[in-house]
Length: 325
Image 1: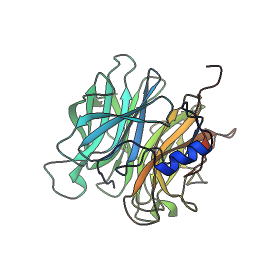
Image 2 (image 1 turned 90 degrees about the horizontal axis):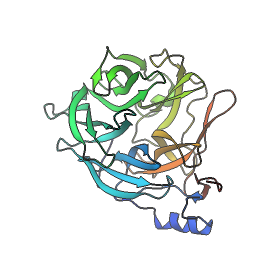
Image 3 (image 1 turned 30 degrees about the vertical axis):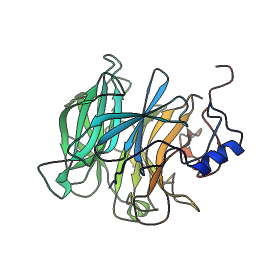
């Protein structure tokens, strides 16, 4: 459900003007979405290493460029981290092993042995010693699947979440022995059941797992990614393997006036030590792949409910470090 064109870093001229008008500073005190625009980027993932943010996204489809930032607002393109001659590179997910320091890039790309249909997409993994790459391809993990996300629990156990597309869009979880090796059979944890997930196609994809106060929050996107109805919801469970119960207030990020198709996100701690959602929005209300990247705050309330506040084109308080730091 992705499109890909060449990506270059940049904030549009009008967004720059808004930032200046708001008195934005180089440390990212304020920001205005979009944060990255050229090339219609989507499906971002952000890795933090030694205080530097590394961003990867769906772009030109021939692998992944990597962008760096100190503040989640200003990004610099550092070039290609992975070249993928198979094409159709979508939805990267990054994991850094705390013991070895190795970086694992989980990718979706084209299966060169299948021309069309669900099995034409596959999930694989590549490895590097540095988040800038170059990443070396290691293996294909799942056929007929997209949108991988690796989660490490507090006990060190690893779980790979992804969207199987062989029989509709079903989110699966695969226990892993290590970042390269499946440990057991994958099991289904979510599928489209709610009206908002079926506003344009029947879709649940883009999984991202958070753990908060001992509860597992499986965030995901629903409806078609080319639709302005694309949105984000979540489900909770007491185990990373489920069963997951969908939040009754879904979707928590959705279309509103002047803002379309927010979806396929990751969550990262900002320099302010608060949580930030990095995601894409659609540029307009059409059925198309006109998209850009955005950031906005995300938080849990006292009852453990996830909230976010979406924005587009207006200056917002940014993830700046505290003055004492």
